[in-house]
Each structure stands twice: as structure tokens, then as C-alpha cells.
Image 1 (tube, rainbow, N blue to C red):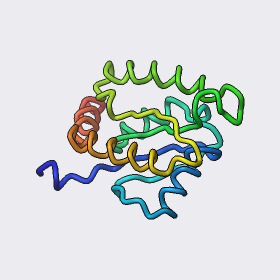
Image 2 (image 1 turned 180 degrees about the horizontal axis):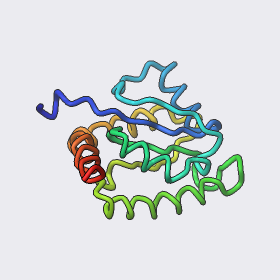
Image 3 (image 1 turned 90 degrees about the vertical axis):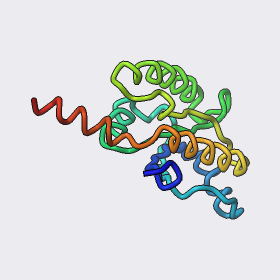
Image 4 (image 1 turned 135 degrees about the vertical axis):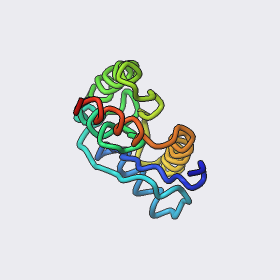
Length: 147
């Protein structure tokens, strides 16, 4: 399968107050972007557990985005600070379990940044397309589990 034939499966966890509204603005503005992602609305980026990321990637999803309010602008005061620290550490740890760290993207999008949402999604889909499917990783680990 060539890189152009591969359509990555991506999950985007978006904070209710900012990045979800930014995604909505990108949609109603009819901004062109890949359709290879599914948005999951969460109340805050800090509510996304690192285990969700690992389970999502190990289940065969090709990439995960966690998008929240800009630092200093969180509706829950410091939720995005906690998320930034948590996911920086998780990104480092992914390599130890055989998952490329670039399969996780954490970024900040406000409700008025539909164009930024479009840019982030487009860049991330292209990066994951370059990395290829995670199914090879998942298949290899399932074989190890059954041995």
C-alpha cells in the first residue's frame, strides 16, 4: 500500500470550551481538511487519561490528538497545565513500548481559531500518513501475548 492510499484513523480529544468550538468553527466555515479523524468531546484536556491514549493506539488507531484551551486560558483554571505535563511525559514513554511518539499530538486551539484547527489536523494527518499504519505494531504485540 502506498503512502497516498493509506488513510489513517485518528481520534481527536477536544476540550468542550475551546478546541471543540474551534473544530465547529472550521466546519461551519467550510475549511478544507482531511476527513480521517473522529472528534471526541471532553470537558477538559486534563480529563483525557494517558491510559486512553495507549489503549486507543494499541487498538489500531493510527494517531491521537489532544486539543485544549491555550495555556493560561483554561476554564478549569490549570487543567491544560496538567495535561501539558502529563502528555509530554507520555510522549517520551510511548517510544519505550514501541509506539512512535509522533502518533500523539497535543496542542492548544481557542474557539475562534478554526483555521488553526484545520492546520493542526492537516499537518497531523500527513505526519501519521508518513508513519504508516499502527496495525503492524498491534499485530506484533498480539502475537507476543499469545506465545
